[in-house]
Image (spheres, rainbow, N blue to C red):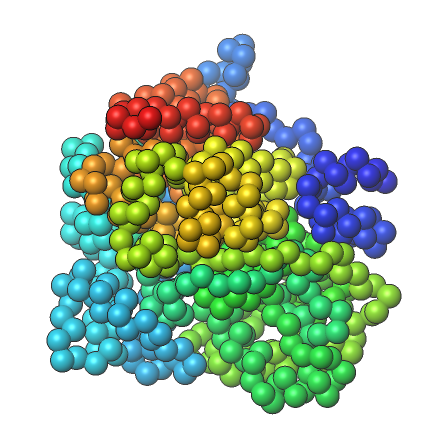
Length: 626
Ligand code: SF4
Ligand code: MSK
């Protein structure tokens, strides 16, 4: 039996607390219950000291020095910890990059006229990106340019070239450093493949070179796979522009057909969004007694829809089960990444139909309907029809929508921020030089049941903006900060006097929503744009990043490409590296001399903010700023 203290210790969110009470009443087990059941978790794994890379193992190193200090093959703690971290980076980079590849495939099929319902929405961005790849647009239609661009982007995944094309956006000093260190990213797939090779038994047994390749692998994500995902999403679905919306479980409607869209890739959700506005389907919903069709997003698919269409956001990672506990969801679509396999079981307690949509992501107790560009439009209409038909099966006694939604703004792509500044980043530079904005921090990443939901994101962000530090955010962090009310213009009142003045002048919140997890590249592109304008390196600027509640391998890849790009990064949960003093020391201190930035780990958001403020003050002093 959960006490009210137990519930408050799981999440700071009011909608989450109310739904945890209902889950208890409905006898639904959630991620927090399963976490409790796992305790104590394996200490060897927490330290990164276990290895099952081959069948001579599994092996583990005794951290107290009494048991074995090497695995069967002779690998010591440094090698095992570095290999494990390397494989986490590879998995994260592969996830983002495969997402990017899926979008390129849609771009190709649009160009070939084989993807009904999809279109090229941003011809200007298409032509600009094509020009970066040396593709001429002169006198050519957008489909012809798109076909060449799709081919060039496909080539980036397996290229034999010495560097990825889009690294040219990085400051010259940074590129020279990557070349000198031998970590310039080459083919996107190559770096991940090489990491898997290096970490096979009997290949790279030098922990330093393993970690250096980890940075290269992560750079292939941040300046390759993720960047391609974001750029192509913008071309196909539109460059985000400031938009008003609402957030939390209050976005679900008691009198409407509620459809939730969960995952990461906008390919499916954009088609559902189109179908949900078809007149005949809206009329069908009304014929079934509903006032309409209500779409809401959750996690990063939600962020994609929110950024471009202003579709309301139901919640972040740890809200995904609780959204089903409302009993008000007719259908949830999932694509891939961060989708808990438990969701089908939770949905089975209600009338909710769960639909998996990707050929590469299957889940227990879900119905699988595979979306491809050629069938997506029709399949979306069919399934939205079925969601409507599910509405009369809702059990009113089981429905509880716990709170009123909170207002928010989203849609701050780099293009939108530059437009808000009058067409150049110079006003932002001027505000930083004048000390009105002391620096900027990307607060990103997931939730993790080891940390009270949203506690890390919200408290870190609150302190940073109070110290005149602009926060840009993505992913689950962005949902947390919106839910806390930081994403309305009035939230400028929470900011320090300088940031408040700037926000007031521009009519923007002090916390800018920049998108989903692949969209962390929007943050690095903004950093690169500032550095390029100043002819400096990114590591010279008063910038930082934080992932206060991260859980996923993708977050590790993001953190590594941020640090390798010169951005100091503070993690909340400890990654599994403490089993090696050498690896820990390199990540938290030694990298400063190598790439001009390090990691820090600090789960207390108040202390994490202090670390970041001190870092920003040091960078300002280095630039001769007060
Ligand atoms: Fe053990 Fe070495 Fe095999 Fe890992 S690679 S399981 S340490 S023998
Ligand atoms: S959804 S990677 S839980 S941010 Fe992108 Fe959220 Fe983290 Fe997934």
